[in-house]
Image (cartoon, rainbow, N blue to C red; front, side, top):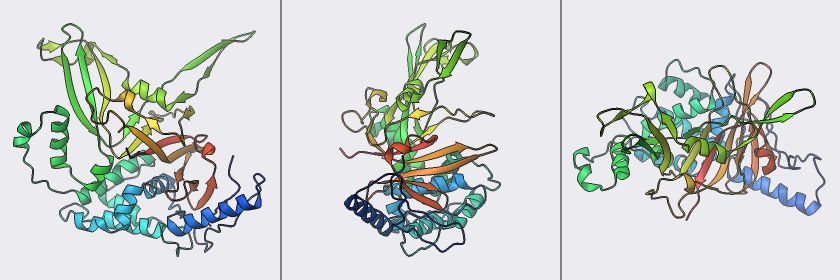
Length: 391
């Protein structure tokens, strides 16, 4: 159920701002509570964001992601403070143009003097410049392209030599991380890059092969479970709601690799049947979780339940030697990109938690409204944004 306060942005071209006193009658509320709520909204408007984004034409997927990134405190503060200027990569394809367009948009979104929804024209244009022919309308794909472009504009050439890594690191996990960072070093990577451990256990000889791979986000499969029951006439089946824990369990569940999919065993010197298991080795400050809802021509519309105000503990999914063991694996949710289907197409919105007031807001292109935290989990979540809790 929505909270009683609503903050509405006008359509493109209108000059109406976000009137903090625009309250609906969704539920009764005492005068003092109403006053406090109004004060919190005014604080939010004055201190950070709550700016709607005009739709450039079937670009709701971009607006949804831009709102989520604007609510990514560690990222937004870096750009708004102009700290990024000292890290610009002059040799990048975009020569810093994408970074500057993104930083300018974030500053304008936080500027309380802006009176009407912004048009993210420059960011959209720079993305097309970074990837000519870009026409996808998927929020997750846009996020990957945008972060990749920002990373490219801020990438720092590392003076470290890969030749002496083996003598400096005793951990294979650390060695893999440093080799990656020697080539892919940026503030964006600092915030978003984590590490997965893949373990192959060969059944015939018990040999284990371990490799480490970086990730910018985790794409979790959605388990398709059915609950069956009998009616007086027929056997019926209905989908059972899944939880985020179910998705992580499914992601880290051992997978049998056999036949043509059998990998090469270095001990047997031939392809062998094995089990493969993925675990988390290193966790980033910002964890992005992408739910794999889309197939070739279908969408999995199952409800995925996840905690909104309670922290998520990823310790059960860490490998035994992970440095994140022992209290470094708690995450708090702060933004969600939602995909909702209509008759002929889909529509994207963003649910974001304000970093100052801790209130949740729903961003639907140019419209912004205050919502109850319980409504966040009731939407079709697609991409979840988490910040690591301080130890």
